[in-house]
Amino acid sequence: MSKRHEAIGIKQVVRLEWYDYALDMLIDNMAPNKIREQLDQFIRDRLQTGGYGERGEQTYTKAVTQIMKCWVTPDKQLMAIRDHALLYARNHQRDIRIALHWAMTISAYPFWHRVAEQTGRLLNLQESVTQKQIRFRCFESMGERSTVERSARRVIRSFVVWGVLKDSDEKGCYEKQPSIDIKDQNLSALLFEAVLYAIPEGKAALNLLMNSPALFPFELTAMTGDYISQTSDCIEVIRYGLDDELLKLKDGYQRDSIK
Image (cartoon, rainbow, N blue to C red; front, top):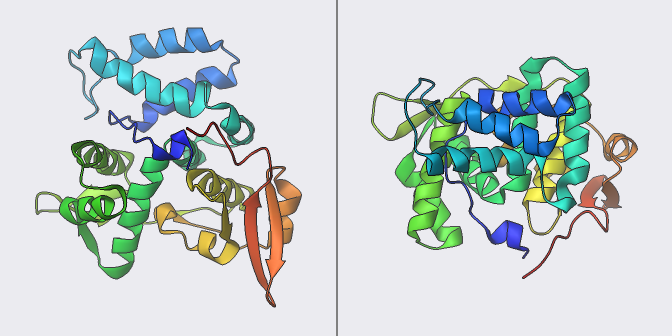
């Protein structure tokens, strides 16, 4: 398992408009150091609740670092998907950006993918989920550590801030918001690619990706492996059985530094 997949790394709740601000600067070809400077200024007095207030430098710097790692200066192995997502953002309306931010976040921070996966699985079984249930599922797969608990709590709160979950009347209990309909096959393929980067194996059956609980906020468009292989330079399609297809990151895309 790579260092990226072992890391937790989610240290702040980061709002979608903060991601959008960075993405706009990236689209304008602003240099990474300038983007970081602008993000520092932009976020220093913005709260995760959406309001304004004084924040400690260490606090907002963690939020800036997360945005930079997702979009501006991702790991080398993620440059291809970042470029795919950036090209898509250049050519499409802003209303699809939540899917792009989701893709880049689960790629850069596989822990986000793990929490989303557990959340999605629970929502497949019941109409609401509790923080305690999600946390327990995360403990089962990652061990009962305080860092896991704190970071899982931040990811869950991010789901609420992003509008894919909503707080229920019961504290610590959440309900799913209406699914976001992804009509464009290219965007669905980008989300599948992101899941492959988020999992250590770098491969998964197409039918499992179509129903991935980690993509619970989205209603995805059905497609064939042939279509994906024609649109993605990173994904290899392997057929097995009568009509089953396995999607796999091509060699050179699936490995980062292993420690």
